[in-house]
Length: 243
Image (cartoon, rainbow, N blue to C red; front, side):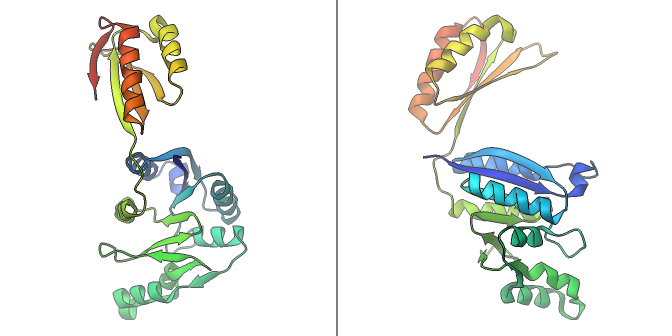
């Protein structure tokens, strides 16, 4: 069975437009490679109760939850507090994280810096030789920083944890308007319910008018749906296919 996940991006800077969001996109791409179906992406404020409610809801609905943002040393870094509150545990100082911080900062270590050593009570650390700062996992929740470079470095470690078959994507480019072949496409979709088929129109493109995508972890089913689509549309409508 295909595993599912939800992504929670935390940060007022995202909602206010001060920072362009890229972490959820990166996580989504990686999840496709790991065979994980992303069911929902949510962007929320740096508010403890909102974080807690969202994470608990996602944790109950999906196999995995990936949060990004809100784990630094400042006043608005409240992700650990939010998750801890939602599951009725306390934020506690992890000695390994504390050691990492004090070794790195030395005499410059402050109480605010040690805030980054807090984890929800009962959480575990995922370590790797590529990481200076371990990844925090609490239940089925993986807690990532908001800084894109740090987030990506930590997320790439999970390829050792998630080893499901990847989603395979095929693209079909059609030189007709959607309305001209919608009925044909609907029939193909009805015959291949296990395949995710998407239709994405474009404008001002001389080569094609619509890009169709077919996606599945089952290569045989995917190939069957592609053959059906090609026969149904006929070659005169199809500009090119990328497999």
